[in-house]
Length: 257
Image 1: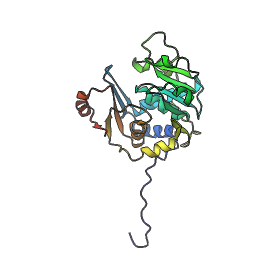
Image 2: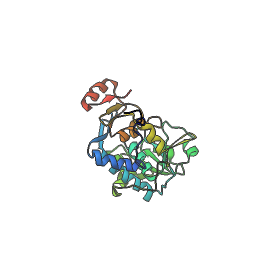
Image 3: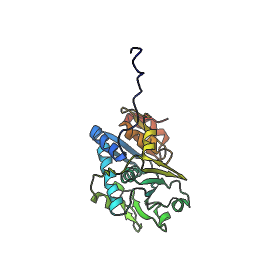
Image 4: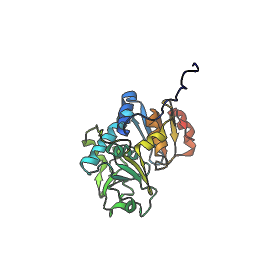
C-alpha cells in the first residue's frame, strides 16, 4: 500500500440477504443436504437430523400452514410453548418467513399469552391444555414422528397431521430485515437485528453441541448464528451429562461455551 492509498476497509460481516427466508434459500443452494440441526432428547430417546434442505422444506410448509389455515400475517405474533422440541426451530423460521414475530411462552408465565396477544400459539401436546381458553388459535405438536400427536382428545390443529399437505416453498419478498422477529417482554427485535448479532459468531466449518434451552436468550446462538455462518448445531434436550463427551465425539461437534 502506498501513502496515497486509502486504508483498507474490513469486510462487512452482516448477511446481505434481505430476510431470513432468503438466507435459508442461499444456504440450501450452498449446503443442500449437509446437516443444519441434529436433535437429541435423552428422556425419549429421540434423534432427529435436519439438513439445510429438509429444514427449509419444513419451515416453508409450516409458513404456508400459518398463512393459509391460520391467517397469520406479517407483523403478527406466534407464541411458542414447545419446550425445546426440534419443531420450535422450524416454527420460528416459518414465522420469520411470513414476517411474523415469535414469543417464547416457556418457561410458563400465566399472563404471558394475554400480555403478548399472539394470534397463534404452537404448543406441545403435554402442555397444550394450558392454552385451551386462550383467544389465540392453537396448534398442537405431538411427540410422535414428524410431530404427530400421541394422545387422544387434544384440542387444536394437529401440526404433524396437517403440515405435510402444504407447499414446500415460501419466500415473500415484501418481508424485509425490518420485520419483527422476536418479542420478549416489552422488547421487539427485528430480523435484521438478529442477523447482525449472529454475524461472526461461527464459521462454516463449525459444528457445535449445546444443552441450552431454545428460548429468547439462545435463539441467536442456537439457530440464527448457524444459519448465518452455514454451520451446524447439535441440540441436546434432557441431556445425560455422562453421555455428552461421547456424543460430541460421535457427532464431531465441539461443546458450546
